[in-house]
Image (cartoon, rainbow, N blue to C red; front, side, top):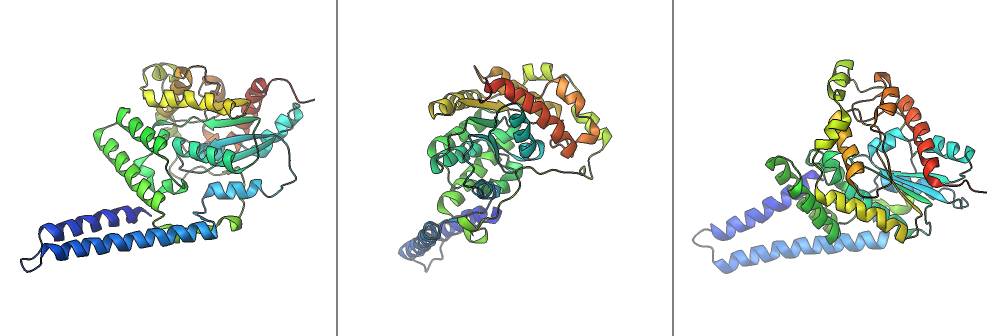
Length: 358
């Protein structure tokens, strides 16, 4: 998918160059014909692709579709649900079945459904949540939204290939993403790369170009587990590296961490929007991160967003339990660490759900 945006841009530049620097014997009208033919051909491809997508109910077959397939596996399950929206940090850190069992023992017999995908971004999570609420007849008792770290709020130009999950970009979120990138305290090169990624992303997703390589009939997507359960650390992860990236006072760093105003405003809007949609609890949470600066970013978002209901794991109490042998790398925990975090999260969540179901 990465090459399609480059091909489109190079093709446009080539046509422009032909028009401007055309040979002396080539009339201007002939270059107009060549450009018009290229545009017409591209339009035909987009229209045909879109018609095929709509008629055969094709999707890109991402982890999100695998999650939805898992949800549909037991239509007789009519329990109220707790819907968890997150990226790979959540996928690796929350054992959904363990969390569900802990809540049931405490008198909250809810279905815990994890809607997660590695490499997805916070704005994509928002689109996914809207799509889920719109296309299902379920109204969760609670929606838990992962608080992303650094570039993960908008888009990470270093992982632009992972942006394949989003099915479309609506105008409001596209504008929100650009505003966030421009107001973020990032180097100019990162900002330019991010905006370029957004533009390319919008063209590819909106026009469905490049879908053929990933197309899957929605009803044939196979379900996957809601929890990764990693058992081995990354080969490059070492005690020395873990020590170097985790040193510092997370509270002090959080105080000076710059959070774009667009992020704070958007998170506040999320916390208001969900109750208006009938969801009783809009809960934000920070999955465990070892990297002290990324952890401080999460804490700063929770601290500075007015009235946000945030389950913040970035403090010292939980992090002291997650020692080196519980980490896969500096941003993802192993199964043993996930169990520690899941048990801790269950206790925090029970406090926020109110009285047990009778």
